[in-house]
Length: 114
Image 1 (cartoon, helix red, strand yellow):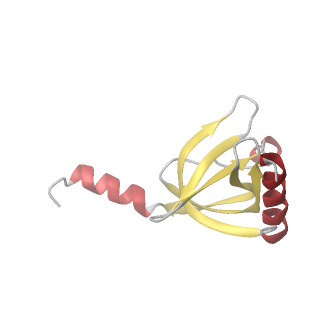
Image 2: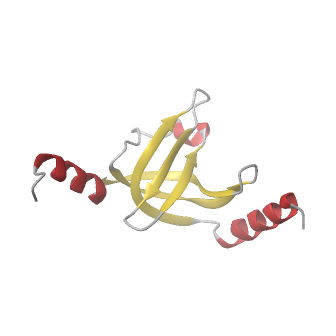
């Protein structure tokens, strides 16, 4: 295999297996690009998943994702072959409340001796 060949096969495998999935997690590293795409990470206590919401979908959102908030995202897994990384391509994004990781961080700042 070349690097490009293996990356392409991995992308095809992931895209066949994870076509329409829901993922829930806390948003971090949120960035909006000048082109209108939204980039962020969904995470829980043990793992993180890169996510992108492209401009066409992002324009339909009635809210802005925020770091520290929990969201449920529906979409598909694909890869960004140029970096060899997989990501969730978001088609639907629903708020799910304040994330536990964010709540703990705020609590630790307010009560440093706990």
